[in-house]
Image (cartoon, one colour):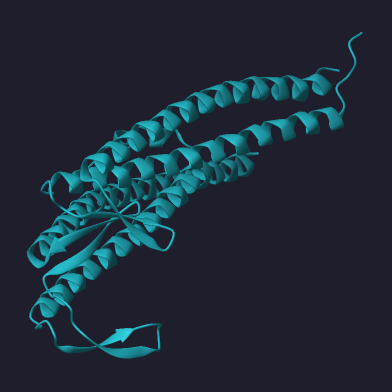
Length: 119
Length: 165
């Protein structure tokens, strides 16, 4: 006869479930943060469009304002946006994987909880 | 316009009292969060408006005029205004741009308009959520009433049954 799942086993699997939920929440937080950064960089790109060729742009590096070349700045900010969007894509995939794991774990827990009742 | 309880996308009539109550609390929490964000955005708009005022007043000054230069929150030293034509504007993500007074005011206006547009969207969302709360409360009250009515009817039939027995 198959072994009866103990309370401890069920508890352990429930904890695994909660862990996965926590990971999903954290991934969503990272996602929101990344999207906020995309938004901020987007605003900078739009502002740069209003500038004449000879406009003076500076970047704050530590405590120092360093003058930058406008064309370079536009390129850098655009690159940064693409990079962060790539991050968002990766996080989205992580979330999908985690959600699948969560569903598997949920089924596992449900089965364990039925086990004791059947005997 | 009267809204059918199903219009929220969830069939409210199918929920239990406890579920309705939880839904009401969740929605009210969302309204509170939206309201707090709304207030924050309003504050941001005020700050842009104050900045614009400061820029205008500053540009009315003459180069060479005396001023007090802040070194810390409480320490100022006397100095003179170098130029009132160029302002260094923080555009985000660590970038600063030299702008004229007019360009700065235009920048502030753009920012302010963006925030204003968000405020309008927020207001719509808040009103929609408030309506949802009302719908849930309505269905909740209806259920409680019909429960009381059927409980009263049960008691009446029981009383009748015991009387006959």
